[in-house]
Length: 324
Image (tube, rainbow, N blue to C red):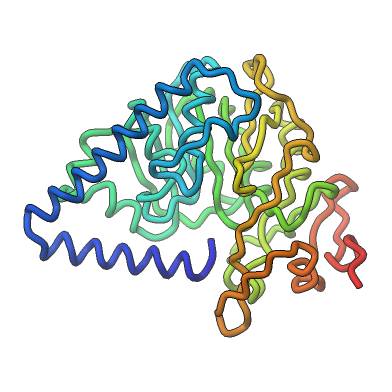
């Protein structure tokens, strides 16, 4: 998550707090009515794709509460595969106003568990002035900074069945290492962010660092996460098929081997989408809007990555991509 986006979320949370504290009932009612309209449109979109035959999961995209079109892809997948336990876990949610699972919770009546550092997500779901969100849905929020030393303990304390419906991981950093560490659950669908800058030819990830923070790891905000190829290799080892990326080139979707059915089974190269997201920044924190991926790599050329295809060999980005 970019510095600007994090700042925007904090500002939005403060504004919401002020609005809730000072605006009239009419204003709050208007905010809730707008959300009801979004839900109604989303529900209509979900019905439209429920029995659709599509070639790519990107054709199912629509956005209600997700960052991009993940809401639609999730709706398509949960209607294409059997789901025994309609339960999700989402790791990395901000304040939960924008997330991969909120529409699934509200539209499909799933139950969920969300984990994030801080308390904004807890305050959001428990705010009675936003429509008694907490009592209407079976959702629980946990505050914890996630790393591989504690992720198993966090999940075990959730006391959920092993065969849950969906796991979403968006930590802007050590996502690969966290999924690799998770062994006590076997989600039917896994959504995980990849770093498009790393391309599709190499199976690489940033080295594991317990307290990794994208905003301080490198000033550019470009050094984080793993390549799609690395995630596909990990998925294969864990018993999953890669079924596609969203059209923004941000999130990859995986479905468990035993229930993937006739969904597309893609290689990293075939399913890779180059992100157009231009959130690179300079040392002063200003956007640089760099579009060319090779130029982005040159900025982080001296940073190290782990080649998980070749015995976790550590190599610089410059050497791996033969940058001049």
